[in-house]
Every structure is written in C-alpha cells, then in structure tokens.
Image (tube, rainbow, N blue to C red; front, side):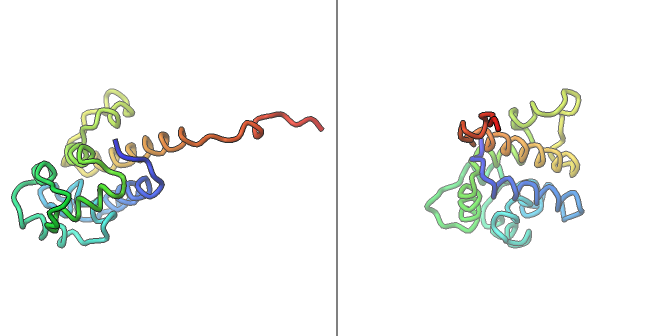
Amino acid sequence: MARPTPELIDALRRTARKVADGAPYQWGHMGSCNCGNLAQELTRMTKDQIHQYAMQRYGDWNEQVADYCDTSQLPFDVIINQMLGAGLSLEDLKHLEKLDDREVLRRFPLEARFLKHNRRDDVVAYLNEWANLLEDKLLEKIKLPEELFELQVA
C-alpha cells in the first residue's frame, strides 16, 4: 500500500476532482486512463506526453509496470519512477488501473464494491476513498503528547 503523505493524498483528491469535473477520461489511453490521470498530477506532464512515452514500448499500464526498470531511463520508466517517489508502489499502480485493491474496496458498502475499472464515476469514488484510507493511516501515526489530554483544574 502507498506511503501515506499529505502530498500523495492531495494528488489523489485533485485527480478525483479533475476527473469528476470532466477532465479527459479514456481508459484505453495511457495518458487519460486511471493511472494516466494520476500521473498527470504527480509528474505535471500532459496526457499526450504520457501517452507518447508509453507508446515507445508495448502494453497497457499493467504490462509497462511489470516491465518497469528503475535504472532504464526510458521515458515511461521515468514517469513510473516519479510516481513511486510520490509514495506509490508498483502494486498500487496495478490496482488503480483495475480499481481492485481490497483494502480500498472494503471501505465501500458491500453493494458498492463492484466497481468498473473504465467508468468515470467509479474511478472518482475509488480515488477519493483511497485518499481517505491514506489519510486515516497518516493520522494513526500522529501521536499527541499526553499533557494535552490531562484535565486542568483551575
């Protein structure tokens, strides 16, 4: 699971908001699919740049992630590197493309867990819930000093 950081949580929410507000979304386009939209936020590249780099090799996000090499310096591997640097794992990218991370899905009501990987509203819901999950994990790590909880008698 992704490393919970305020920056990653914010990027997930920005991506969800942009997709919900009508940003180009096309599951079969490497720059405007589930991972492609998040990549735009994390790399500041356009959907067309991401897609162009992806077309230098074969396959969709899952295949490109499977063939990822952190030292290759191929443009698409550099994109993946930036996403990993933001706190994501290779497994996170695979799950995002299919909307199938069990930890994220468990947070939905049972009847709402059957998300379609290529449906805009489902992508938005998944991104938002993933951000909520990471935020909860981040907040669990914050320990306040005991003194803050002591009652002060005046």
